[in-house]
Image (tube, rainbow, N blue to C red):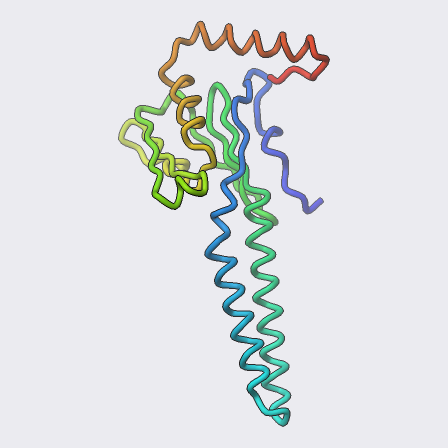
Length: 186
């Protein structure tokens, strides 16, 4: 009931899923640091307060509980957020209690680039910028994308590659999966 829908449920029967990913775990680093620092401050101040100020200590422990709950919610948001790329569109689903679905047709993509900072190279993430004919789309900039080179190559093939070869490659993948007994995608 409260679980968000699987992004594959938003796909059409005529679409073939090419990529399905979650943003890199590094997106949680700042929130982790922030939560740890706030918890450390709450614990330190609580131990420095005299025992007579028990109300202040109780308030600090409730603040610490709120910090932990907020961090848990941020992790849940990261966990349920998915980016699915099909042969026809980008679909991103977000939200724990309220699901938000972002979509951009592949046919609208006019330019594709990615940026990797030094930290991104060390940790394995990058930022993908997807541009369309003079419009700002919902999925214009995707931060903390894991393995951005593979993502870039795959999207470039979908957008700018030979459509006949793509169809042959996807039908070959379907045939290989059927031969192995796996459920065909699309």
